[in-house]
Length: 394
Picture 1 (cartoon, rainbow, N blue to C red):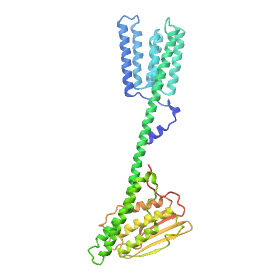
Picture 2 (picture 1 turned 90 degrees about the horizontal axis):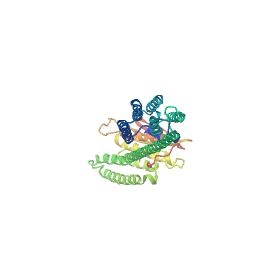
Picture 3 (picture 1 turned 180 degrees about the horizontal axis):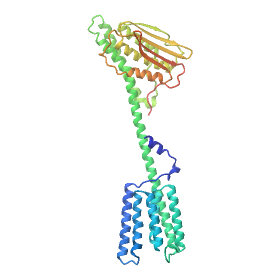
Picture 4 (picture 1 turned 90 degrees about the vertical axis):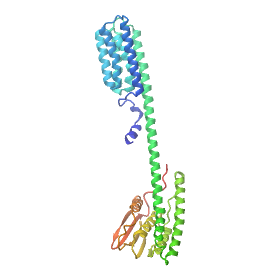
């Protein structure tokens, strides 16, 4: 696609900067045309033409040379020129020059600018020699004019075919590029939908899975049932919201789900329901926090909550929000489990998406163990240099 894109953007003034090639229909037409001319020449010779065998062979040779245009316009033009030169030496240039005039169609259709200029120069020299009586006896000036007219007409036909083919080729490239853009837009929308489902629905399903394991505990059953009921409603609401955004993505331009203060309160409730104590420091509703930062940090809190509910050990969970002169920093610390859990699958998608969101607007992101705690830390500038991710537009 990259090569095609560059080629399709090439300025039109370079129509003759490289050799073209005949398409299948043109090749077939050329073979039929040359075959018909050869048969006609042979029939004229068999009917008792007064030309010699050498002269007739030169006429057939220049006609057959037209077939070389299927493979190489340069070689074909050189061969046609050589045969015409030999016909001048034999004193029978009139028959071969006509075939050379027909060659103008293929020279203009296929050749580069130097080849076309060389052919035109050779044609003019040939016409001048014929007008001076060189290479043919008793040739009329009218015949020389006919050769030039034939070359002009056939050359114009070659130019029209070349431009038509170039236009069709350009349209083909444009259609291919459009199809590629549409495919990329579809893939981008699919990735966006998958990300939204991961960031929102997967979190609620984790809460449901956690509390489903606690239903057998008589003391925890009421709280777990309430947590499952709440998480189910939230998952359904988020799913409907994601579907609505996906349907309206080309025109809606709505921001993704997210509100930092609400996300922190939601995470606090989920942690406490799972038996953790929670300490929150900092004001998530501070007006100094830009909306873009608010949205991204809300996603980080939600994804971190998912991981905490899956893997954290018993103990206190700390959520710290710090606002400096030029940035906002959020830190989430959760105790590492005493025994590593291998029964809960992890793809690493959540951490990757958090890092992408933060690094995408020139922020800093870190996630890893630190003295018995799993620490997620993100720093974002107060004036983000990139836009908050939005639903893809086609």
